[in-house]
Length: 81
Image (cartoon, rainbow, N blue to C red; front, side, top):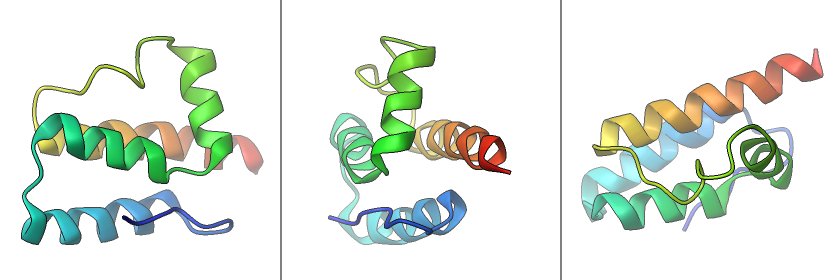
């Protein structure tokens, strides 16, 4: 399990998770759960606020999971600036 520590950019978190998943090859639903669980609370709250079902429904493929997390994380990081 990997966590997005405070100050760690979403692209770095997703890159690390992608690398780990190359070895683990997690099923899509479990990968999605791990990605969501490892996010900073601020990003998870944003996901829940902007789309209530987003955190519960895994995208159709592992790559789409990574893209969705990156997109949401970038929105939060851009709001901080």
